[in-house]
Image (cartoon, rainbow, N blue to C red):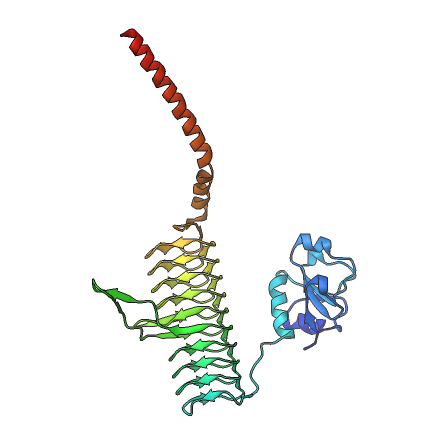
Length: 352
């Protein structure tokens, strides 16, 4: 799709300078740009590297960095507005109604208009697929699943029975939703499986990365809030409640019955014990560990294992880094003390 600089600026309610009639066909990094490209700059260091004459058709940046010969859209948040423009130039795909002949669709399933169904897709009885959704090759939709409008399920996505997706959900390749949670009761001799008969609800605009798994509730519901973004290789256990606009990076593991409030940011490889509560706006650094039943206050940065506020973690880390030096000093003092004790022993022996 192509769109003029003037129309791009108008759609974002932003001012521009230069030739507004130039058509933009694609977004680009500035090294690979051509006269039909849009690039962005949001830092002083990068702006110094940019030439006085752009190869790109247009740049989006702050007014402080603009040079006289540039076609430019003026923004106080160039990276965010660049991302918005990307959706204008390359809009989210929607289905056109193509059904591959190898797909297996139960007679009891309800398929909306303009749904694309790829090769070897299996759709179970009672499943409902909303208008404009796309199911790519090898996807399996279990019995009674509900998929909203304009969802995209990439190859080999598996939805166990009863999973519910709202609208415009994106599931990348290999996602598994609604598998049994890891719940067992030990009776003194063996591990008895606790019932895993609850549900899983994924709200609007959620995106889930490749090979991530989210378990159904044991007796209740696992809930993923609106607009949350989950990276590849994340595990979310049964009965977990995610608020809206939560960010979770790769290789994070969340144990059962955890509650994570709105706008929480979780870095990679964070481990959560069960029944934790992370309050709104908290930020958790990479490889942190949250102990079971722990409550973390909102709007604060946490790091380390067990996770603690960043300032406290930094103080502890400083002391930890000094341990080798402290150990050397301690050994030296011990040697001196041993020498003093030997001298005292000799003196006492001589006195006797």
